[in-house]
Image (cartoon, rainbow, N blue to C red; front, side, top):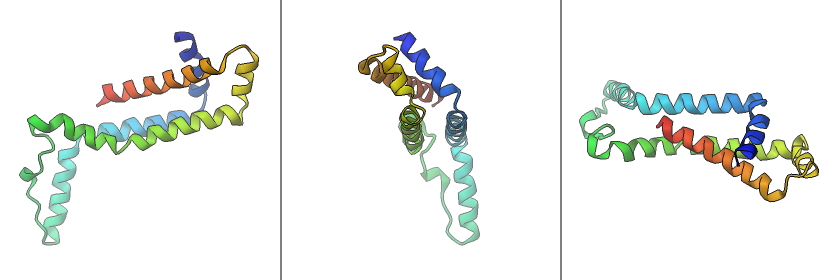
Length: 131
């Protein structure tokens, strides 16, 4: 299994779009989860300028019984970026004909599917660790 993961990661790490999308994903994920209260304070100050005051204490983003579900809900909004990464990974296999070459070299279709699933699980685990 580790061999299949290495094969798939070697293909993805040579692709610049992979690094750009993953970098933007983890940067925005870290920024939004770490500075969510600052964003709320900024929105409250902008709302007060226009006469719509927001009481920050009523927004329980970082209150302890609910902190984990709130942060996971906010980070769940960015799951679309990981989905785009999966689509780009699969379309690159067809565009650069590496899928056909892997099958010719002896990799079965089930092993190809396993390699894609393993790389997606790895991205998801890194995302969970980031949160």
